[in-house]
Every structure is written in structure tokens, then in C-alpha cells.
Length: 276
Image (cartoon, rainbow, N blue to C red):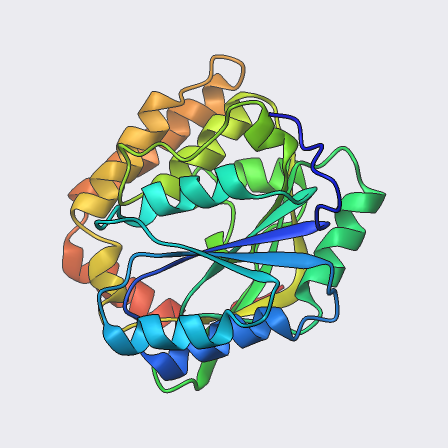
């Protein structure tokens, strides 16, 4: 579907929400509304059942840049993301979560990069790690160029998911999140795009305050790691056999590593800054 909608915004921000506390969701939404880049729409696909969350979103949606979508029953996070991608009108599509905070010039930085570097399809960036109280505890930087990202992707996801901005041509060509992957939809998406030769980049700029819940380590173990392995297996590329084989090997090792070690690793990582 080619985007030929008259007066379409430059950027569509897709946010899937589910029962975030009103103070948290307010910060997330306002961090988009207060961006220095203003030619945007914010698509909120709200799966919430909490009355206060729904009320808060409705109040903020008085801003005409916000469009709220709700289904008659819960659809889940991945289906909500895909609904947002399909509804997006912008030249560029940015991701955002309902519990994070975008830095005020985030969209401006990413749009400028994509305008000046047409060879890249997706751009992410660095993040501040923030606890549930809103206190920044560490920072995380990602490899920048496509080659470094390809190597990094053997071990980890190439992006901090809520920081990404992509060209809408990706969606126009039929690429959406795989709804069979409810725990690693982002990794599977990036692996599939890499298999189809799309180029990635991460900016050194910190683009977002990323909120880490107390159960973050639990979400990165067990069935999550098995899902990561499936995502890599599904997108094995004979064009990059060395990377694909190593990726599968590392992912398998993760699945048999004691979960206590995995949890402690993420706990350490989220309280200690890594280097640029």
C-alpha cells in the first residue's frame, strides 16, 4: 500500500498500551507531544482494561495529533503493533512504548538521519535505563554500522526496540511483526529484514529513557530464550551462513544456561553503564 494520503504527517509514532499507570502513560504520551519535531501523528492502540488508564489516554487524545484505536476485545501486544503499522500514514514510522520517555529531540534526530542516509531502512539509538521510580540507573549503547550490528546480532537484538524509526516502505512491501512470536516479535522482525538485505544503523545519541520493571530478568529467560532461538532458526540466511550458524549456536547455549545466571547478568547490565 503506497502512502499517497494527502497531508499525511512525516512521522507516525506507534504506541501499544496496556494498563500502564496514569502517571506513567502520561509521561510517555507527553514525551511525544512535546517533541521538537511536530509534524507527527501518535497512533495509540489501547488494549487497556483499567479505567484510569483509558481515561488518561482519552483526556490526552484531545490533542488532534493523537488517534486512539480500541478493539471490542483484547488483541495482544504484537497484533496491536501490526494494527498501528497498517494505520500509519507517515513517511517514517517510529516505535514507542507506553512506559518509556522519548528524549525531546529524538524524532528530529532520526528524521534528519534517514533523510541524509537513504541507504538505511531502520535507525535506532542508545538508551538510559530507568527503574520503576523514574530514576536513571545506567545507559546502554548499541553498535552503529550495519557490519557491527550484524556481528552484534549473533548475540543480542540489534536494537532497543522502542527507539527504532523505519521507512514506511518496509510496511508497504508487506513486512509486519510475526504474530506467532509473542515474546520475541522484534528480534524475529529484525532477523527477517536482515535476511532481505535491509541495512540498519544505531545512533550514538541517547534517544529514550527505557523503563525496566523488577521482572525484566524473568522476561529474558526461559520461554523468551527459546523463542529467540526459533526466530533465528526461521530466518537462517544462506547468504550469511557464518553469522547464521553462530547465531543459532549462541541462541542454543542461552537456552541451556541456568536462568539464575541470566537474571543476574541482566540485573548487573541494567545497573552499570557500558561503554560507547
